[in-house]
Image (tube, rainbow, N blue to C red; front, top):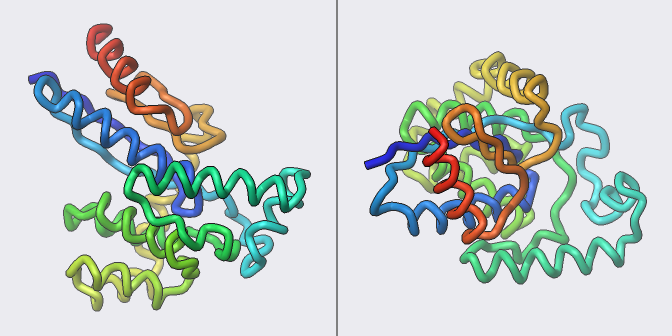
Length: 214
């Protein structure tokens, strides 16, 4: 059995990160008879300076990218269709607010020590894109923790401290230095980079080629 480790650099506020992982999961399932995969999530912040926190997403994105709100609405409609086909809930993607995800990333680090890193990421994606909840708010984060059956008191202690802040900043600095400027980014076996939310078949081919090159 060939072993492959995939480091995923992503932000909870990035819809393509949710889509990218769902596609990666399909690719890993296709290869599961010959490959054993491990996954670790790493932090990236699309809104690190907290500018525009609480602003409706469409006007915020329009200003950031110099596009019209209508253009962005069409793009996000397309994302909703893609997400639905992958079993993801993006029903409220256009109703969400801009928010900083630093505390959410700290909690994902903590969840990794409980063996539930991917599960918490999924719960956070669902909260933000499916229900338009503000994933900067501690109550929202703790509801996601509770839904997974994790220890809410310990999670609250993490959020009320600066635990895992250094780990999150280290992630961001490490991958920025490595040249990761957009997410999702998948680093395979510590040396191969796959950028963006590629289709499952593309991922299957890329992973096979990377395994053969090792």
